[in-house]
Image 1 (tube, helix red, strand yellow):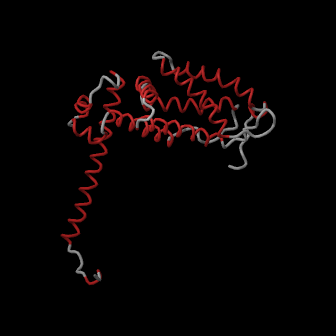
Image 2: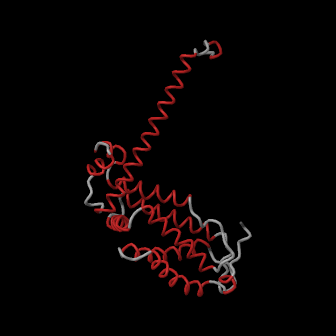
Image 3: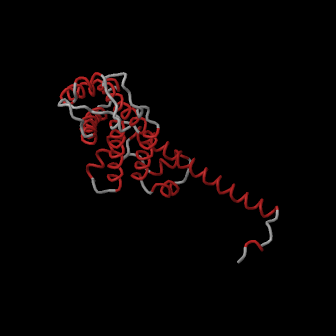
Length: 239
């Protein structure tokens, strides 16, 4: 059909189309707000009483919605946890304050800043109690959707670490340049182990976690990198 031969829309028809689009946009925004409210209430309840102890009905009541609504949005508690962790990790990555390379401080300080930023942002996503549950659940049931999503979070953090470290020459003690993926993986593994100690200790402060991380990073850096690079990091010409 030749659309040019169709009669033009009347003012009423145009208004109806505009109104329909506006109503659709409003419903979308309302759904997004409701979803965020459910996540916020679930996060608070999980932190207070533990993931296992909280029911979907309690989450629904706290969020002011029906229990079927919570199931429709997330499926189950694992679905809520996946959303909390994966979406929180993406936001943390987008808002990272350490993406820009620095040459005005020594490299140990740079590494510490990178990984402490990850630690702080990780704790903003969920409490120690929630992270303990998440780590345990993914270890006990490694083939579940939750475990797969949890692995993707680790991969995203490792990729972020690699992106940051790739901006440096990474001059090794023998004068060659290190493989950024291997180096990123090495320090990520050290951070991960230290972070596990942190979340397993309910009373450990962030400052103590930072001190532990520095104590593990410093000797490792001295063994791996050239002294001049450690003192005054240089940037990669590829950047």
